Length: 337
Image 1: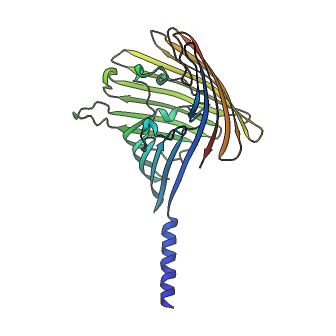
Image 2 (image 1 turned 120 degrees about the vertical axis):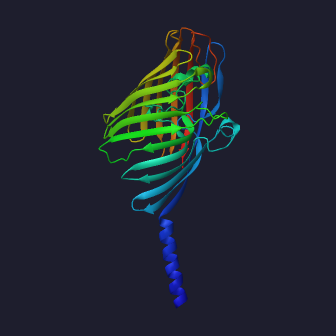
């Protein structure tokens, strides 16, 4: 009888301990037929991530007691069309962090994560697919001083969610240059207000001596308001290279609107331009998402891109001449788990 009592106690302790910790496997599987049209070449093929970026990840939380929790997040990106990892390597390139969290004082997070400035992006298309907003990175590798999506070796602090809607982030990261210099060291700041239908934010980031671009700064401001029948989004940003004495700016106006109980219409206009040269591109995009369930959706997006003053951006792998236009179409299926 004592053995059974002992086993019952151990089982209860084990169950309690297990209940205090959780690990979740999650991911996105998204494949899209991509059509691109340009003045020089056209392209049709199967691509990935037209509605949401493909990913496979693990995240977990442990209750440490007294309101404090520990957490980890490991997330890898992959290409669904050919099964390869991003850049042909499967690793936790999207996010790899560990955290201490408390509802009273916020969260301290270490590792590879989104930059504070990218956390302030407002885009009707979620920065995915042919409809994604134009920004400095859209101009190509010659504009490597653009706002970065993610950074490694980061230490971030996030304010708690009990400040009456006010939110903030402070981030510092190391370039870990081989010569021990400050090259690549940077920081980011974000402040925002999120309450009911209103969501607004402003951010600023700086990186020291980023190669040929010298010191780099990135800033953006944006917001959204949900009217119920539709949500309006606006955003503007600037990236600056001190060594090149050059600034690039981007702008976006977008909207989403629910249709029936399962549909969502999305539309946006975005522009990217380079100061002085005024190299410029404008994109108009419209799309529709039809949810087959809470996890599965069909979607389509059409975009028209107009180049100006020597710009030659093209959509979905097509090629177009300087000043010529481009068109793109996505049609795909997304499943989350």
